[in-house]
Length: 585
Image (cartoon, rainbow, N blue to C red; front, side, top):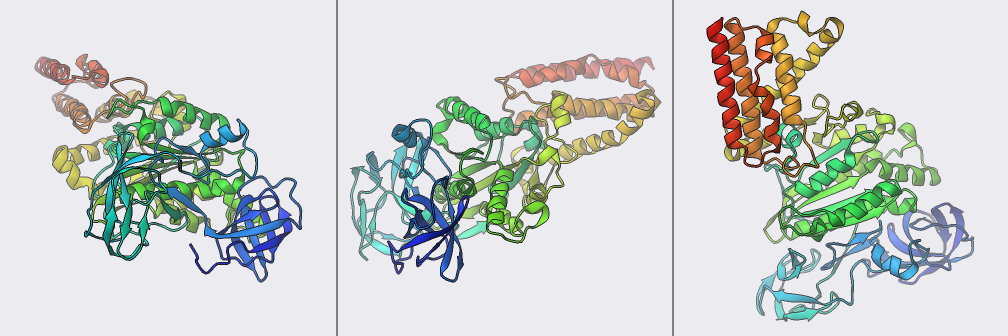
């Protein structure tokens, strides 16, 4: 990226401290990529002190010694962007794991490199501009059919506006020139972009369309907007991975980027084996056809873990620039923060809270701020929604990573181990969770779902909060000691929890619930509530109301595809029972 850099400038290693090494005699800039030692291990300049440069190495440094050569490439850490990204599984610095396995087997050796894209494979390029057309940075010049996604070929964001001199169609590799501009610029189907630099956009817009996930507790109570940010903190076993898989499978984003950042090897293996087998419900084809996976397990070099989130967000921004809605899952940002802490300690920087570097909050902000609903350089609309899992030690939400994340993100889905132990899934605590997008999404819900929806959601949250207050009394003296009205509140809250909030990710019907069904389910519970309070005011006892038989059929609605006839029948039966009770008083 720096033409004035002395490429090939060589120095020698001076000091080694795990993945952090120091070299002298190298003319380098910050974030230059260098090759370290006789094995040419890949590293990145992270600090310059006079004549000495400090490098974080993305591979194991065992066995290297002072005096070995260090060579500067003159380039920043960058990813290759072009056809072939989808269906790929990369490590943290965009080396394709399938290629590494072919080269060295199941155990990754040091010093091996592989390009992010297949430079030998030919793609069928279809031009969308013609000779004489004016193009500018971000313009779409053609397209390639990649899996079921149309991969749009863009003018790089750092190019100059110009006119197309020549453009050709046919079968080409990503290195072949497909278009020449009148200023001499030659365009291929591949771009390189430095991972730490956000890709430019024309304008960031206010997110006002929800990312529909089909998960009732998320869409119904705590929605995330397209281009929004969310955090899923939770202890081990509370369902982070299943929740993220549900989001990847069912959210109405067109592209999914999944970053397994520092997770345990067995958990990442589960993702790598399950994701390729998941069926995309929209197309019936494998979900991997619109997915990019980045795998960096906890036993891989710590520096590559730090780079993996930047690699993932850059790939997501590239698809956003084509006009796609992209959903990025980072699992987990806690392991990323731990990598920063380890590198910071080896740099002998002043530690902050719990040993994390003082710039922890700034780095988290830089990452999450790259999300957004934008107008791209070519005038289309695209979004990157970032959903970061957080793994607080012992489920302690007061630790620094969770707290700093909460200051940045606008949606908080708090996973609760107690709910998962009670087999309530998704185990998202409705009292601790929140969404700050509710106000900006109200108009969409009024327009697309029902003008009553926002009122129903507020009512459900009020009932759940009231139940939480009453539960303290119930635990002391029992529910029978409560006033009659509040006994009904406890029963209605139970119905909201068990009928609406609980959802079976493994049931063919209940795994996804569209907004119209969510509205009908919530309206049915509200209808029972209205009938119950009217009957209670007429003198019917809470025990009689709770004993209404028709309401016991409501949970079955979740598992019925064509549910409306059954729901109408249940509502009719409920009204009959309540009418009979009122007339007998």
